[in-house]
Image (cartoon, rainbow, N blue to C red; front, side, top):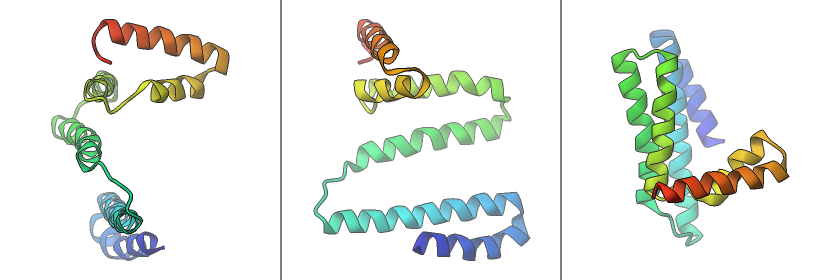
Length: 130
């Protein structure tokens, strides 16, 4: 509720002045506020957070986004960057086998998913990415 309220306030303040960019800024501010409150609640529940892992997960796509925006890269050029990000996450051990299985489960039936997950993970292990 708090993050939605802050987003509405920032929409009201930023959209008339900055248009679409104001909307994007308001959304980001709302999500940051939501994240701060989630961290506070999780800390009160004594939940162990892996801050470095979450920071890396956030920094990589944000950095790529800034590069894409600054260099005005076309949408087709983004695909190799996304694949590269996936491999960076693999190398940093931020993506595990069950994550890959979930990806395959979302695009095919469960039986095929298990087969392709095992094939893909075996290839990644041979390349020393997992």
